[in-house]
Length: 204
Image (cartoon, helix red, strand yellow):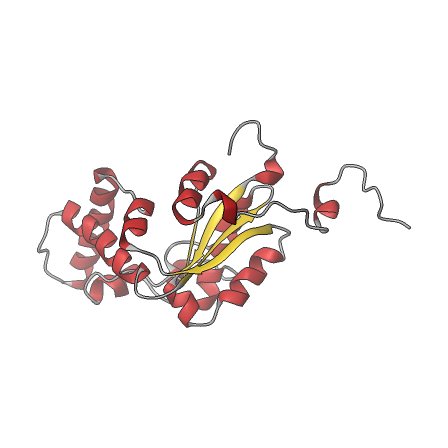
């Protein structure tokens, strides 16, 4: 978010992934965000492309190495063979994610409001559903785990939803999936109670 932008204008990118769409959870997920007071300013169903996904998940070698080491530790615990270097296991993650994200339709959204990124991240929960907190989307609606993904041959985590991790990433993620003309600027009546300083016009 730019320094001259009002905090209530912070935007967060969210995507209901193909498993969320296939399990008919779009409405439940949207409801969770609406109830906080965040404002939906863009929404569309899409078929993600490989190019979009690779641009979105722009990871570096440090990330690949860290994730690959985690996979190796899991494989050791399961007694599975170690057949690659850590960095190669890390790169495999992106390959499997792209295959997963392009397998069917997804729903892309932009939500706006004070601390939008942090609020949504809290509601979505941790990346691994089996250890995500009760009350979060991932914790309540699915049961996948890193161990299960590794056991099944390094498949992508089926965790229903993507959300922007930090505010500094919002503009980049949004630009991959939306054009400026698709983002609607409007006033939500409920914003009066959330943000108006004087609460003018509440009483008749």
